[in-house]
Image (cartoon, rainbow, N blue to C red):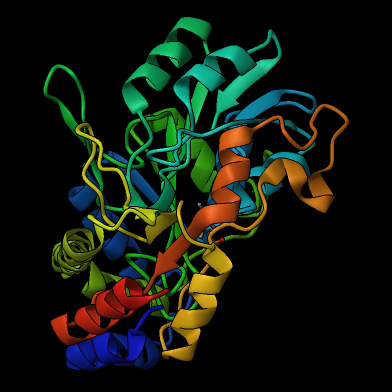
Length: 369
Ligand SMILES: *Cc1c(COP(=O)(O)O)cnc(C)c1O
């Protein structure tokens, strides 16, 4: 599904130099590499503040803590996403309220969000699934009208650009009150371990986030709030700083592969290719087909026999996960997500796919019975 080895070999001299610099300095935690990377990522994304943390899940948790939400407050998330989005809501004693997604984009349905709002709703967490922005303009409008916070889960969408109706362009993670991303190795900007970051344009929130991520203190050993210990280490920051310089090139390589898949697979009536939205670029964290005229599991099995990996992201929607069983929800409540979990199949997608591999994958798919 990914080829991190070939990518490393291409960037080896710079990455090795960055790693060596950290080891020789022995500033493994809070080294200058971390602040340098935060500054570069702020420049790249256009976010006023970037606070690097231990992973993307921590970023989401810290975001909700910084907003001062209280137990019982409702937070709206899509039901078709990675578990982390709802996990942190539940961990903090907040109430996850799940909504259905759109069939074409697989992103949170704006209509469904509108209907899910109650007097206890405090925040919306749109997930920019598979690398394409959720429809942020109407979501931000709803949030403004209703006095809600927006925390973007941009873990799969770093570098995706959203265009507003007035022509303004903003990057994934920089449109809501807080944005969160992950540097898990297979993410579009991945480190060699765990990592994550929060984005915000709000000075007061940035200060709160930094304090919460650091045991709830601004002045060492003086703890104003209950916080957590979550930080990006210097080695990961050094690696990410090198890879950030190549992020546009990584995104272009992913888009090349996606365009190839679109071209060869687009005309086959047995599946649907990912729907592109006019308002967002796509950074193709995943290239996900919807199998509509052929059995998905049989396709996956046949691909496997030909040496082609594929993955089901995601096989179970949040409202049907055992840990998240809730009397409010039952099977059938979110028909689009329930249909998607039965038909989605993600193809190999990474920065090192060459035309020969793409041809083998696409021709194998087309030849399936
Ligand atoms: C990867 C991911 C996360 C969690 O990131 P980690 O760094 O693995 O904690 C959260 N949400 C989504 C949508 C993700 O893809």
